[in-house]
Length: 124
Image (cartoon, rainbow, N blue to C red; front, side):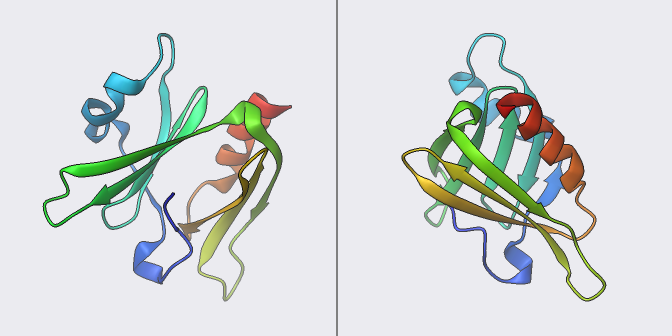
């Protein structure tokens, strides 16, 4: 699992899905589509219609990658925090059955409300 609660340069920022599609296409289920992508330095998150895929890029070359699937149906509770006047990031906390809490930090300006709607539609 990726730890996205680090320094400012490791916060997640939005990216275009097309750059990650070749990497995750083989593990997507029939009918599953990418909705949004967020990247830190090398690691990234992909929100699909069914789950969140966390990709941890490892090693010097980055060829080794760890994929963690976090299905929406296992989310019990979720919470968002918007950026404030002095706070430079937005945050998402998810509590998964059998896993516990996952804390994600995004750069200021990330549309955290759309992420909240996506999760809400899948969970509620």
